[in-house]
Length: 467
Image (cartoon, rainbow, N blue to C red; front, side):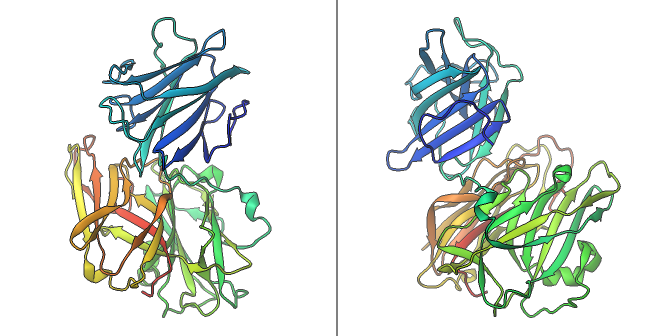
């Protein structure tokens, strides 16, 4: 949560703790005026800075730098970093504008704004999709120029224009819920292990209900071991022995697992939010006469030191609404297969591009009235740098469905789209994943370990199509 002792100047749409007891950020975007208002609080009485970076570092970063002097006056500068050196003053136009600021209880708070796109060669556009955000601070106000920040810096990858603030758990405490989770499962001492558990829809949901929010139950002592959690829908014609539902290493029952690897319903990965809420008009349907009766949770544990005797009960909590919503939510997945034969990325390459295509004949089940896409979840491993999907309609590129450039392995969020996007019968889709293997000496193949690679782009939409 937020730790700054200073009350923000206005009510903002979004807020984020950049680092506990160090830095907090608030912001509001205006898609009509094409501008964004920030308020940055940092635990220092020196200078503070916030920037947009092409690659997550100083090189090429566009920054707003400010401080409050001893008389209470605000000083604010537009700066640009040509390299990993002190950023220079922008000598073209000044496009970061201070609004208000103060110092209080050892913290500095400055409110400022800028346009999404300034058309300045020394600025970085704040585009729809993902953005690399950087921050830094010094311990004293500048006399002539800002001092080197040393280790007082940080970065985050997020979507400033479509950030989905995670709701508080307390919002749903009065609702019914059920959990899909492991039960003190002993994790094998292996570098990479996939654990699967099959669940049946609880019998008390005899009529259709809507899930309106999910909470990812990650045990804090094990959070460094968990790479991702996926919930799959099992094949609707499949029936299991309810008294002996599978739980164990996924490879231990390939035939069963294949029956439950059809549709990905819910996804979480490293750096993701622990609470996700659906829009008011839609929910994920369970129970009643629905075809899907069984689900499979898959948890990817990454244990490079092969530590023994780890037990885990992580999983997903489903909050159930008392009233049905207008639409059922479904999921689309684009990208490549995860087998080793699907990806082969050479070493020592700055930008290796993998393109995949979803043709017109694969989208003929989209109704004539269309479907509405509401969120995106891009997923790759350590070498991934960018994941994007474009809509192609009548042989022309219409727009990005979502542009996950940059992609950061440590911050794999579910992104609510700035505005919902309509898809129609016969639309086609082009997905591109870009990888950097400059730190590799051998070919990187597709696969499940973090040292292999993936190219997946998962979208939530409504109304759910018949598949």
